[in-house]
Image 1 (cartoon, one colour):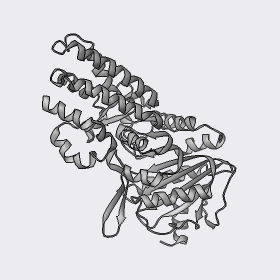
Image 2 (tube, one colour):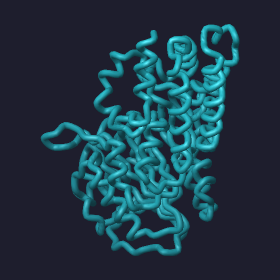
Image 3 (tube, rainbow, N blue to C red):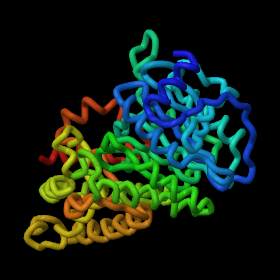
Image 4 (cartoon, rainbow, N blue to C red):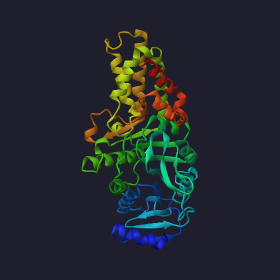
Length: 407
């Protein structure tokens, strides 16, 4: 599809004057924020991407806020735009503009981020990944790769793409990416990310309400990184509480401070090692905890994920019940209680903001998931990919295998 055809399609779609303008790129050094959107709609989400672009266009960039989108569609090649109010400014200075890229290639993401940082400097940067998400396996599915079928960005590839950049806020408009595995992969790999905004459950097709979020950003461009992160959470949850579309029963969103995730993993290892000193005595409590933390979206296929804070809280609370730990060495019980309290504290420090739709508030959804499949056989199917994650090197698979052996 040529450039003129793209302009016509957009104009028809948005039913408003839309000019796809070919202009040179100039750095905007006085900007407070640059929001870079890596919009991978080269799959079955193409129509939803069009909706979100339309929402962004109701606000558009200003002198203080740049909204830059790299948009790959299933129908044609990708294009880079600066989003303006009621129009899109095509960025022909970007090498990948107008070509068919592989959005699942880390080199593509890195080239986009490099371009944005060079040409749209700002005091703060937010990067938003838009597409399907698949927990520890990755995101950004590109289904238009000649001779290959599809590709996706693994989290190790995200690390490769973003190393050397300071991202104030990393946001995913995708499913099940608020997991300890993903957050720790970024943390332990040394990525310079301040805040991480992601969904522990399903992300509905409607995604974020970009019109309200961007309107607040443009109205208050000096907003802090934390407050912008909270704005994404608040407007997202408020949208689905107030008549948003399907799947609202499982909508949740949280903000994680990446620098605090390492302590969570250290404390998780300490608690699991304490339990493993008497896994036979603790197996039923671990089973109870897994059941309590198995949240509503699991019935739709993600039963391999559970809520981590709820899991730890259940272990702590049941350890205080004499009837449930009567066969366990009291020294072990005391150690598990102490380690679980420490872990709950570090989780609270790392998950600094979390909200759910009203229907989810009593479900034990507290902002971060962990991989805990229903059986060892299920784990074997995921083993090769899972053990590439840095969390797997911190003893979590040992804990899972000890539990299954005791059952």
